[in-house]
Length: 116
Image (cartoon, rainbow, N blue to C red):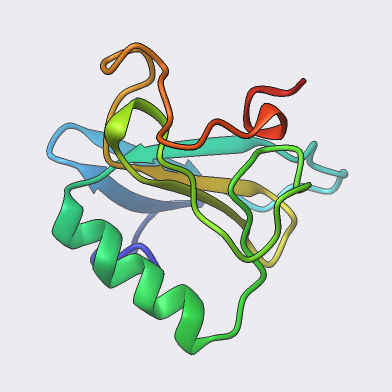
């Protein structure tokens, strides 16, 4: 979905390269895994490509982490962002500007975006 290269196996780990110096290392365990939130800072082009795949697969997506603004993206910090869930329920976020880099402003501030 995010355009990464296929994962590689190393012993009992499956490694997903998410940047030049960062991998997510997965392994099978015999217990419930707590759902997590993973945010990815992407370029404008990468955002367009990922968002196109989200829409192609008809995945639910939200403008906010609380899932109260369905089917939209946000424009916080004069960038773009959206949230969607992976098949295991982990929340994935893509954003084109780091939070605070634009003063946390939005062209049309929706209080739900800021958790109000």
